[in-house]
Image 1 (tube, protein in one colour):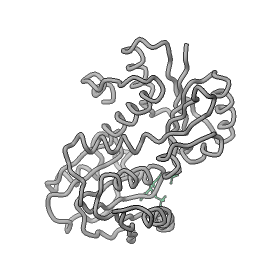
Image 2 (cartoon, helix red, strand yellow):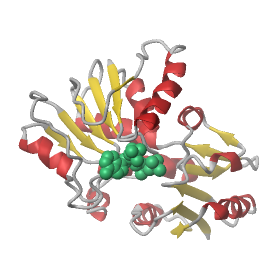
Image 3 (cartoon, helix red, strand yellow):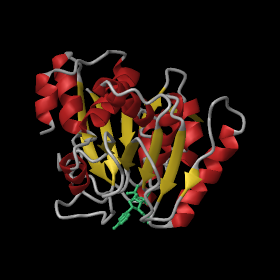
Length: 274
Ligand code: ATR
């Protein structure tokens, strides 16, 4: 029986086992997908278990997506560019490879909404673990500008410098701007990548009263389904979307990497996560 695992800390909330075990069963694969809470000291042991084929694949979540990198043999271009790994595979040649399926997850989730990002102005709230993957996906989808704002400005500036050094070499990648936390520059789409909203009563305390009409409020959080951020956006008459589809699509990509099968997103999958 092959064994797959999601590692993180905390991990209790992770819905990855639900969705992967559903697809494993549906596709008659002899495998089990489990979750494990780890500390940094345990990362080395996990890698040894992968090398010894005691574990066949691993999903990595907060706070280890970057910390795991030194233990891996190789990174895909996406994982390298974002310094973020959420899926690990042992190749048939015995190499442990780090993938980033959050980028594709976000891209497919946005495509699924029918919203065309090309030429749009984006404001990103937060500069944590998932933000780099979102920025990378936004560049892929040819947005016209990206502005970052984070409570701790230095973290936004770190991402700004990191991406601006890449942007210099890429056609159509405009430089990222950083504004003070609380400032509201003009945007078409605003994306919450902070952890504010995970608790129902969390509030970003930002003033959206002067943002204008027809904006798109996107939250990477999917549990709860509607954060205060999304509720505020909706009450002001804007389009909103939570992170559920992004979560499903990143899992689809991971499943394909491990099992070489395109899993189906059906009603049951959608309901599993509610
Ligand atoms: P990490 O910072 O370890 O990568 P994360 O969960 O990936 O953790 O990211 C948390 C994000 O939510 C950060 O952007 C964080 O802002 P800081 O960099 O200032 O910590 C943001 N965040 C968390 N609590 C917040 C709050 N009360 N108000 C505003 N932003 C908050």
